[in-house]
Amino acid sequence: MNDQFLPDIAAQATHHDLPLDWVGMAGIALPIRLASAAVTASVDIGVSLDDAGARGIHMSRLYLAAQRLVHQELDVPAVLQVLDDCLSTHQALSDSATLTLRGQVTLERPALVSPLTGWKAYPFELRARQDGRGVNMELQVEVGYSSTCPCSAALARQLIQQRFAETFALEPLDYLEVLDWLGSTQGIVATPHSQRSTATLQLRLAPDYTELPVLALIDSAEQALGTPVQTAVKRADEQAFALANGQNLMFCEDAARRLHRALRQLPQASAFRLKVVHAESLHAHDAVAESYWNWS
Ligand SMILES: Nc1nc2c(ncn2[C@@H]2O[C@H](COP(=O)(O)OP(=O)(O)OP(=O)(O)O)[C@@H](O)[C@H]2O)c(=O)[nH]1
View 1 (cartoon, protein in one colour):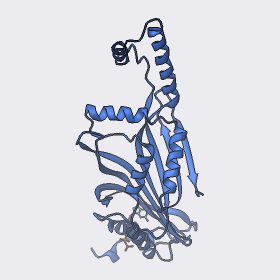
View 2 (view 1 turned 180 degrees about the vertical axis):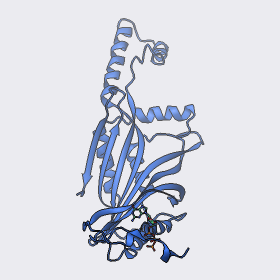
View 3 (view 1 turned 180 degrees about the horizontal axis):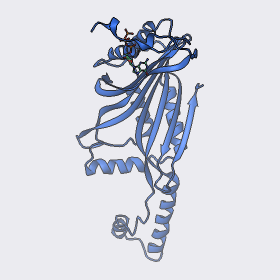
View 4 (view 1 turned 60 degrees about the horizontal axis):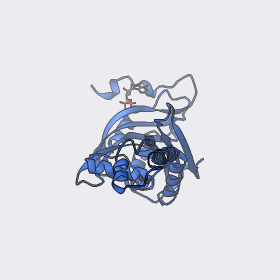
C-alpha cells in the first residue's frame, strides 16, 4: 500500500503543547566493529522534541541513522554522521540528538609465562550528544584486575615471623631445615587476602581525534594496575601471577591514584572520572575510590 494512505499519527499536532527532553529508542541490537573486533552493541538513540505542538518524532529515521554503523569500525566521524542524520531528519522538531552504544569488546591477551593466549571481555559504553553548544563524546571502559591488601600482607608476614621465632629460637639454624619449613604451611602460616577488582574509566574525548582510544585506555590502565586478571593459565603463569600480586600490594586508594596518573598521560582525554571497586573477600562489602579530572 502507498505510504500516503497510511495514518501518520506522529505528524499530528498535540494539544499538550509540551516539549520533551528526550524521545527515541533504547536497546537496538547492532553488529559493529570496535578496536577491529566484531561486537554486538546495544544502542540507544534519540532526539529532543522541542516543537511543543508536534505529536511525535520519527523513530524510523533514527533507526536508519544508526544503521550506518553496521559492520563499520566505530570511530568519531561515524558517530558524528549519525548525530547529524538524526538532527537533519528532525529539522524544526529537535535541537539535540544523543547516541549511546554499550557492549563488550573481546581482546586477545597473552599469558604471563606460557605461550598461551586467551580472550578477555571489556565492557564499554560510548555516549555522544550533539546540541546547540556542540558535540560531547564520552568513552567508558571497565577493566578487571587483582588487588592484594597491603595491610593483610603485612599482618600475614608478622605471623610468619612469629612462627619462625617460635620454631627456631632455641636451636642453631640449619639451612635445609629452614628451607623445608619455608615450603610448608607450618612455615607460611598466613596468606593475605586478594580480590577481583574493577576499574571503570570514563574519558571525555578531546576534539581532533578520529579514533576511539579503546586500546590505549585499556593498555594504559592495565599497565598502571600491574595485575590485570588473566585468561589462559598454566601453573607457571599462576606462579608468575602470585609473584606479581605479592610485589603489587594495593588499597583501592593506591589503584585510583595510579590510574589517575596514567589517564593524565592520555592526550585523547580532555576530562575523566574513574572509579575502582575492590570486591573485598575480608568483608561482605566493597572498598571503593573515585577520582575526577576536569570533570563537571
Ligand atoms: N513517535 C513514535 N512512534 C512510534 C512509537 N511507537 C511506535 N512508533 C512507530 O514508529 C513507526 C515509525 O515512525 P515514523 O518514522 O514516523 O514512520 P514513517 O511516517 O513511515 O516515516 P517518515 O515518512 O520518514 O516520517 C511508526 O509506525 C510509529 O507508529 C512512539 O511511541 N512514538
